[in-house]
Length: 149
Image (cartoon, rainbow, N blue to C red; front, side, top):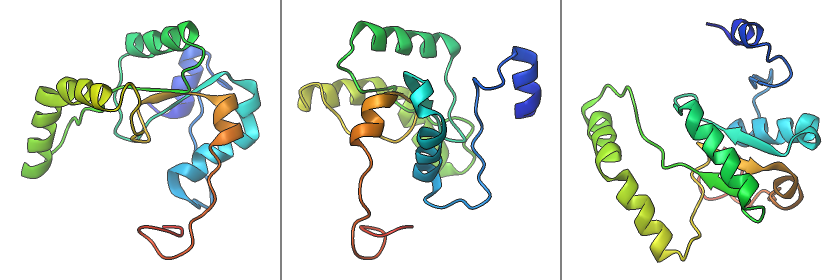
C-alpha cells in the first residue's frame, strides 16, 4: 500500500507524513529538521522511525500515554529490534536483539541512572524542547567524526 493509499484509507492526510525531499541534504537529520521547521509548532510529539522500523500500534499509544504522565521526559525510545534480516551476520544480530534487548536496555537504565544515549529512531520526541535545544552546529573537520556525511 502506498503512502497516499494509507492516508486515504485512514483519513490521515496532514496527520501522517512521509518525508522525501528532492535534495536529501543531511539525510535523516535533514528530514527531521525540515519537518520541525514546516510543521513542528503544530505538534506536541513526533515519532521517528527508520525505513526498517516496526512497532505495534499499542506500543505507540503507551509511549504517548507515558509522555503525558511524565511532562519532563523529552525523548522516550523503545529498544530497537532487527527484523527480516537476510545475511548471516544480520540474522545473528537479529537473534541477539530478540534475546538480549530487554536486558541490555535495563542495564543501560541502571548504569546511566535513568539516562541513556539516543539511537535516532523508534522514539517519541517532545517537539517544542527538541526544536529549542537540539539544533546542533556542524563540527569542523571531515566525516565520520565531523562535517557532513
